[in-house]
Length: 277
Image: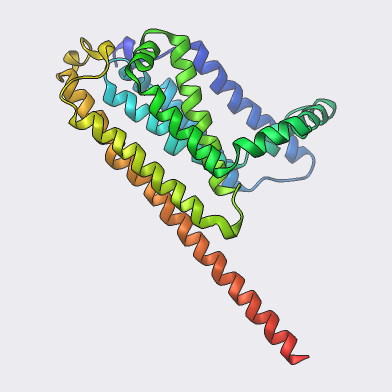
């Protein structure tokens, strides 16, 4: 593997290492207290962390500086793979357990303060999370911002944080922020996300000119013209990424049906018990 394809960026590797060690320390602290964490949750966190590593600290990151299509794969890994895995892992309790008792209580007190709770309730509403995530995706694909991210490491880091952070809030709002009676709206938010990201992907694919000047002289080294590279990136966003949102909508719909069936069954059992008395 060429040396230039092996990313050694402390600004990426150090936060990833800290996150992994922090979670491991939390698991150890919980075990010492005689408690446990579900294996499924620990595996989900490990998988989410691994996909973060693949997206940000593997050769994919170096290739993404040369190919827009690779950059698109990187962003989709952050938003539709790593983000939902980390949300489903529910790592908050484990991460808090890594702190000493006094520090942990202080962090919990700050997190539960009225101002923080109001801000989270506002941002964590599914409609708000859906809107913010959609705006983040469209705004960062504006040529002036995307080119700036390619030319400036700090801007690039902010771009990745925006994609990952907004995606995590979006997935959290759909999985945990909705009451059972509102599951249908979650399905709608996933469907519309598939639609608007598909539209952006289609625009990239059918465009007759390359949008991003920073890639103009980079794709040739890989045997692609800038326009062909952009069309491939658009297809990645248009088809597999949109299908991922639709698959998530189907899974949520199946969960909604199961919960409805359980609710009906509980109601029928309660009615039979009442009649037998």
